[in-house]
Length: 374
Image (cartoon, rainbow, N blue to C red; front, top):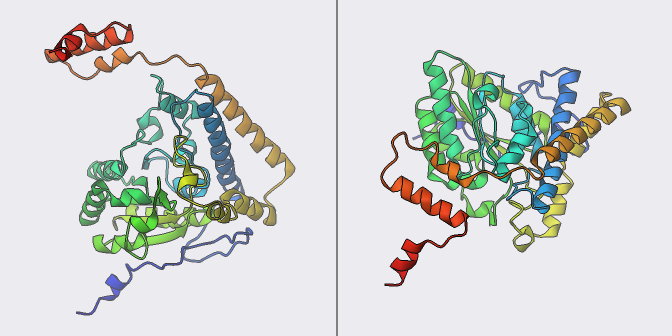
């Protein structure tokens, strides 16, 4: 049986779509317009700088014992900022745990992110105000959340779309399969942005899939799969904008594979030198998304010293505000875990709360000690 033209059109190119060379040279494509004015092009850069500058501050805070752990986004800024900027304010974003750039694009205060990783009560933000769902640390569950929100918006008669962000390792999770299949069957207005940063903690991409690429997985679901240079912020914007237009007009979901690299360890609790080489990391540093985009702005006459100084000042002020908010912040009272779960607590609830209270006060749990002595 011969494949139809429509079926053949679903096969993605292995070469990622790129609009900016590593030296900043711009190569426009008529089918992927970058419909941004000068101010918007500079705003893309400002989001990239803010994401990277705050990333360094987060790592410093964790090293100083102010955060429990932190997952760096170093090297992945363009994949996040470019795609998030292609969404309208009414559209939804479902993130996992590394998409700090998406949060900043939507105006979420870095301090709210900081309190998440510190574990304080003030953590996170108002999802309805920013149209960004809370962090979803379990792998690939953000895919299900995005599909659900997208379907809900359509049922309400809205043309809003949703974007789901997760990593290459997430494509091995059952939740991702269920979300992709459901979205394709019901033509949900959703875009799956998969940041292929080459490593799922210590597991390389080759151990995640036998397919030619992650984008090729889309064929099995009956949706377009597109590979894009995840270190090219303009390509990420243009490809995402096209996928958003497709979803908004009712043509269903798209899978975007943003080919990028995690320059830092998986989290601050990880030692990446145990599973990857310095030569590999250095090769990807040569493709730095900020260096590439700054070169484009300079070549195109959109850069000047005043803009550079203002951007640096704003990023430094945001980092200082993050530090002031997080450093030494009061810890969450663990007993508050019991306050907002049950409207009518079961009989075991009071006993469990009392047990935790005794442990926090340093008193021995006599009931458990006696049970262990028999």
